[in-house]
Amino acid sequence: MSTNSDALQALIAGRFPDTRGRFGPFGGRYVPETLIPALERLAEGVRTHLHDTEFRQALGSELATWVGRPTALTYAGRLSAEWGAHIWLKREDLAHTGAHKINNALGQALLAQRLGARRIVAETGAGQHGVATAAACARLGLPCTVYMGAIDMERQSPNVGRMRLLGAQVVPVTSGDLTLRAAIDEALREWVSDPLGTYYLLGSAVGPHPYPYLVRELQAIIGREARAQFQEAAARLPDAVIACVGGGSNAIGMFHAFVPDRGVEIIGIEAGGRGAMLGGNAATLSFGRPGVLHGSYSMLLQDADGQIQETHSVSAGLDYPGVGPEHALLAQSGRVRYETAGDEESLAAVRALCELEGILPALESAHALAGARRWARAHAGGTVVVCLSGRGDKDMPTFQQTLLAERP
Ligand SMILES: *Cc1c(COP(=O)(O)O)cnc(C)c1O
Image (cartoon, rainbow, N blue to C red; front, side):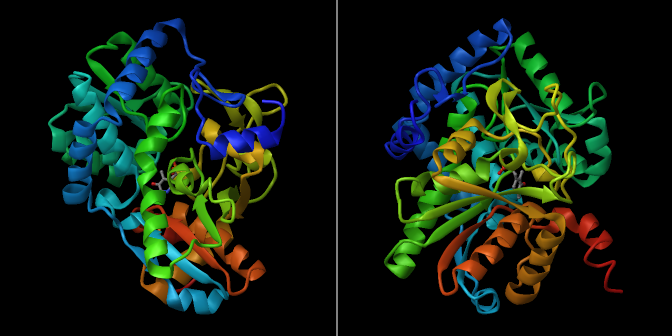
C-alpha cells in the first residue's frame, strides 16, 4: 500500500480483506498457534457457505420472518425542522432483540450449524450481544454459553436474566479486568479446547480474520436496505451517512454499500466520553495508535508503554479500547471521517429524539444522532441518514440517573 489514494481505490473496488485477511496494513491473525487451524476451518466455512444459495435463502427467510427485516427508514420531520437538515433514521432499533446485533448473531449461528458445531460460545460486555446470541441459539436449538465479566454481570443484570430466560448458560469471568476483555480471553480459551465441536460467535467487526469480514458481510444488509429505501423515497442518494462506532459492526454494516458512492460523505462517531484526557473516552480512531488487540492489528487506546488504556463512555456498548481493522483503513484512506460525541451531547440527543419523534434510542445510537446534529449545523438543508443501531429501553437505569434526575 504505497499511498492513501491506492487504499481508497482498493476500498472502492471492494478488494479488502486480501487473501491474508488484511485491510491494508490492518487486520490479520495475531493469535496463538493453537487457534490457527480453527480460524482456517472457519475461513473455509465462510468461503463455502456465506454466499451460497441455500445459506442465503435460509438466512433471508429468518431475517424476514423472525428478525423483522427490512427495518424501516423513517424521515424524522420534527427533528429535521429543529436541527435544520433532513434527518432520516435507519431503524435497527426495530429489529428483534432491539438492535442490529441480531443480524450477526443469527447469521453466525446458521453458519455454525452448517459447520457441524454442537455448541456456541460467546462473550458479552454490556450484554446485548449475549442476548442476541442466546435468542439465535434458542431459535436454532443450539446450546449456548456466554462469558461475561463479573463486574459487567452486576452492571447489566437485566441482560443476564434475559440470556438465562433464553436458555443460555452465563458464566462469570473473575480473571483479568473482570469485564469484556477478560470475557473474550475466556471464550477464546474455551474454543481452543474444543475447536471442532464449539463455534465462537464474535459480536463485532473485530478479532482475527475472518471475523471482521464475516461480521461485515452479515451487517452489510443495513446499508444495502437503507441505500435502496432512500433511493426509493428520494430518487437520489443522501449527502451523508452517519453511524456510531464501538467495535464497528453497525457502522461497517451501514457504510459498506456507500463506500463506492464518492458523493456520499461517510462519518463514524466514537464515544468522546468526558473529553480528550487519558481514560476519559473510548475514541480509538481519534486518540489511539496502531497495535494488536484480540487477534487483530488495528488502532487501539494504549499508553506510552503499549498498555491498554482505561476507557470511559456513558454508553456501555461503545466502551471498548479497540476498533475493527477495516475502520482503521477507512480512516487512513480518508474515505470515512471519524469524530467524537461526548456523554452530555449524546444524552441531549436522546431527549431530542424522544420528544420530537417518539423514539427512545440506545445511548450508543444517540452518539450518531449527536454527530448528525453537528453535521446539520454545517450543512443546513442537507440530507443525512443516521443508523439508529438500537432502542434505549436497556439504558433506563442511566437515563434515571441523568436525564430524569435533572427533572423531578
Ligand atoms: C453493541 C452496540 C453498539 C456498538 O457495537 P458496534 O459493533 O460498534 O456496532 C452500538 N449500538 C448498539 C445499540 C449496540 O447494542
